[in-house]
Length: 357
Ligand code: SF4
Figure (cartoon, rainbow, N blue to C red):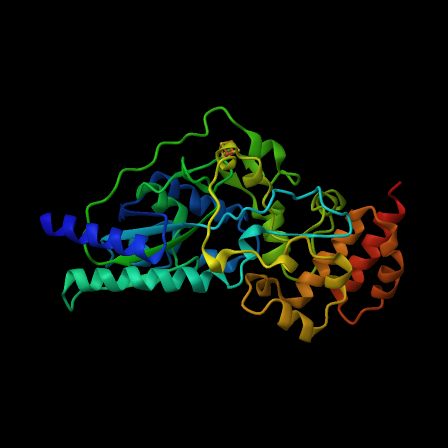
């Protein structure tokens, strides 16, 4: 165990040097928080995110247990880094002709890449400290068959809030997580106690009622899912579309209202500093963005995930929700757009604007 303590100290130091704000070790054990996962999938709450349903060779859901996904793993190093910037909170207060991109996507680089670069440094220090050729490690930033927030809780990074985000008492919830599965048995931290208490702000604030109960998210109603993961047509549900407001990529509402984020520190990491053009971008720019301009504007940005077609569709829906009739002429053109979902969204947006006082 002395060796394990030394290795953990060296990993902690490497994580700090790499720029992580928090680091901890979780045991490989089935946490009660994962018991919900098969039921969550069975109820269809993952929407069309088929990667959530990945199975191991015995037909078991990988994400339901680390024993399914990585039977060789003995512990998980969890690193967290703050991406909060000093930009103001503002989902809905901006000029109504502008949309909202979730703050995690404002940076100059895709966070998957910048967090992974840092994580590789920690992985190298683990391998150096271990000095054995038998060590197996795997690094993941959002891409692994693992529910990161659950291991983050058991590594002592924070608790899982009723909004389903990991929350740290000092740093709030604007955190990117990176995990290293390792075949090494390291001394684990203690799980963080839940500090949500009687608060229900996130549940009350969610405009689409996607938080169907404390700690339970129905992705099908979640603005982040709808604007990023949902391909093709958005659900034919007027209330849902209207409640999406002017969100064009992701949503920060359930974190913006969280009292634990009031004093969240701002990061000075250069790669997380916002690109001005991604804060409240003009909806008419995005609705008609060319393929070349999309590539240029979103090079290295997570916004590419929704693809140009998805971003244009979202911008058109947001125009409908803007209450700004100046968009009617452009929408009139877009009803004959080459993209089917832009066309259909434009029809909806015109009806919505015409029915708005
Ligand atoms: Fe928990 Fe309140 Fe934050 Fe929701 S808003 S995550 S209930 S503290």
